[in-house]
Amino acid sequence: MTEQVSTYIPEQVSEVEALAKSAFDQVKTPEDLQSFRIEFLGKKGMITYLLKGLGQLPPEARREAGIRINLLRQEVEDLITLKESSLGREAEARRLEAEVIDVTLPGKGTPLGSRHPVNLVILEIKKIFVSLGFEVWEGPEIETDYYNFEALNIGRDHPARDTQDSFYITPDILLRTHTSPVQIRCMEIKAPEVPLRMVAVGKTYRRDNDATHSPMFHQVEGLVVDRGTSLAELKGTLLAFARRMFGSETRIRLRPSHFPFTEPSAEVDVSCPICGGGGCGVCKQSGWLEILGAGMVHPNVLRAGGYDPEAVNGFAFGMGVERIAMQRYAIDNMRLLFENDLRFLGQFR
Ligand code: DAH
Image (tube, rainbow, N blue to C red; front, side):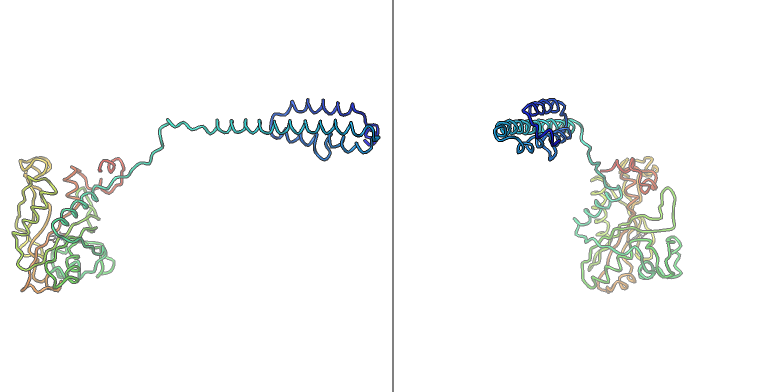
């Protein structure tokens, strides 16, 4: 090496220049360019090597050789700069091509859920009663024997308990069998205020399970306590509700019945919304559908709620939401409501 430097001749510059040109022609990638830069301009690169040798030339040759080597270095640096930007542009173009987005492709979309038919009916029932001046109340699903039975005039040995077998947590705590206990809870808070108008909606539980019964179902409870309310007011309220719920032509009828917490008591039927009362499969040719139980609140129940049955009276009603949903949407098996099959549930909006 030292030998070569000391015997430096301008031909070496031409040689390096030729080498640089042919090496540059091979540069295709940023990595190639980096190797090229090191090969010629790096610490041990050929041009650096030539520059280092300058000092050993006789002064008269040094100037001219210096100019030539620096020109060559400038030339190589320019080539590198040019190549850098062209490689950059190519890379950018490739990236853009790879990332191209076809804005005409269909979007992925987020499937929209739909409300459960039971919830649709609950919302509608609430809306109707709120418009009639009722407040919406809630009560616990885990109830005590007292609220679920005793306070509703259903004593320990009352036969009505047999029809409402439930799931007991202790002998005194159970999953409520109806929403009627909310009547007592509401009266306890409101008494002696009148008028009291409330509806309570929620889950209820019984030891039942077949095509028309589910161990968990929903009820709507209604209670009015006032001075001098009447069976006529009860009937008018339920007729207004039925017409809003099932159509303006709907009629209702009250049949005598018995509930321990009302006296007198009635089963309430609506004219069949499918056939209008003429008789069809849904109403089993009778023209009527039973939708709720109702009556004038029993004095013992008013007393349990903290009201004086000598001063006020009341009416109450209770209905099963699934029943109404099934009639509304012509659903023939209650289990469909709780199987969570989206093909079924997606039909309700
Ligand atoms: N709680 C009754 C049941 O589950 C339904 C009922 C009937 C509620 C008459 C009432 C009523 O408020 O007055 O079978």
